[in-house]
Amino acid sequence: MCKRHRNKMYKDKYKRKKSDQALGGSGAGAAQGGAATPGGSARAEDCVEGSVSVTKRTGSIGDRPARPTLLEQVLNQKRLSLLRSPEVVQFLQKQQQMLSQQALEQRQQQFQGAPI
Image (cartoon, rainbow, N blue to C red):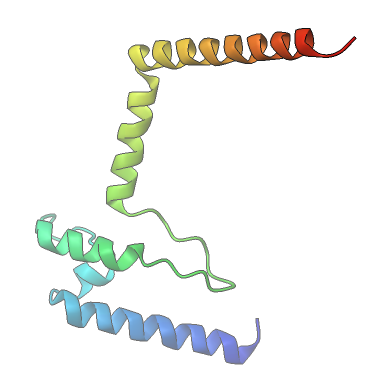
């Protein structure tokens, strides 16, 4: 990446950080994506504001992929734990068997309906 574009990206990130700090009011907490303050306690409003600013993902060339927010991480964990539960696994297996059975029946009907 050339010097000009690198400098432009740095300036854009700096401006975005400053605007997030101005909107967030708490400063570093909102700019770091709602991370907990050094004392270990973050208000729910700060976390929400920070996560909103972090979810604005930019697709600039040369940027590393944005890390998922804390909310996205928690939701992904919950989704995975639900998908691994025995009831859901059994349900999905049953649905998959039904779909494969329907596909087999459709193939048999097409085969029987084909001219000889």
